[in-house]
Image 1 (cartoon, rainbow, N blue to C red):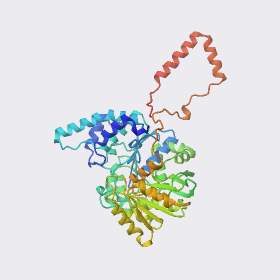
Image 2 (tube, helix red, strand yellow):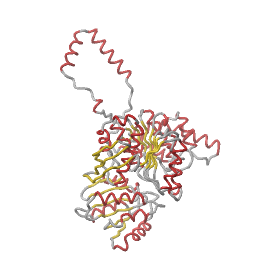
Image 3 (cartoon, rainbow, N blue to C red):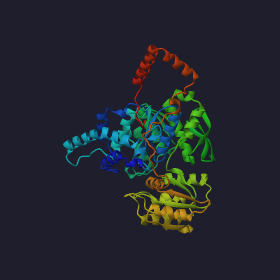
Image 4 (tube, helix red, strand yellow):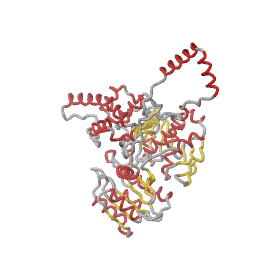
Length: 505
């Protein structure tokens, strides 16, 4: 049985979806009230808070991978998901299991219902109620505190100041490149920046990507107002060298005066090297003096183990199929540069499907010189851009070049067509939205029932081997009944004092 077919999970997920997946209310009143009823669990642990226009999810996963390598248990909260909502809540790199998801929902939802009831008492039947994203955010904060985690790493859903994640402690704030994307955040990078700097808390360590001078000035102003400390990519942090390697790239990263060489990063593109530098800066800020005492191998192991689904991810061979969730021009430019640099495709078939309201032509334009064949279709979403819109944008980008442009009624048909067109040495690139990337990923790498509730012991947690010395000690105990009973009592007492762990942890 696929994990998301678990009956309790389906019940909880359907109830969560009933709150409206895309419903958004730009204020913190409901999440604040809900979190207070829960005891503000999101403040029980230090946190890294990540915003920006692109690269947020990559930075979150990179920070978490570094934490795992250092023996720090990290809970991660990302959005949106590709194949299952359970991906959004992860502990030590492992998504929450379906049964535990349902349990956490059942623990938090009654308080969300109470917040809703209070709102209706104040404002009537049309009162604003807890949204899908707010409830899910509260579930993440609650689950992480219950685990407990050593650190929470949270991706902003949208913006910053009024995003539901903004009740975190926010010990470290990461601001990736800020550009325009969501119209709700304004029509300029500067307007978006004013919303995103809202995650900067008093005294925080602030890690920022390279920004335009106007955006950088807004960030510096917010840092000064909060009495925070800023770390800038290109100044305090740097990718000192980078070379294409099998399965990714070989990079050297600098944080302050420390340089870590020969890091095999299993991600493609210069933008991912920058993301790794930002993540390493956030990790250094989080761990402070401990970072300088760590061996370089901790960094190499952490960054070398990272997985970022749907970001220039190879999901199939013969032909090679690459997915990227680029859904705005900035992300598309980064993806195009990564493909051009890392993959030596003879021909490239682009399969594109975007969402309504996006700059479709701007998303397709970076692939103008790369694509030799284009298949446009509708994204598998109620918010999909129309096939006519996709066709018009593709014609505007490739029409003068004589590139073949075909249309398909749905993504499955489009992928089948692309596979037929691609020959040996060719590649297929799926772009346009995370929804599109997720649906394509489900075709090639479907979710399976991998028993996510099973307890997995880390190597250091495994019991030591039973050797001859242990056997001699046991034989001695067995000869003396009183000593044997005393040893059993001590063992049982120690067992009672051990912390209990949920099977998902």
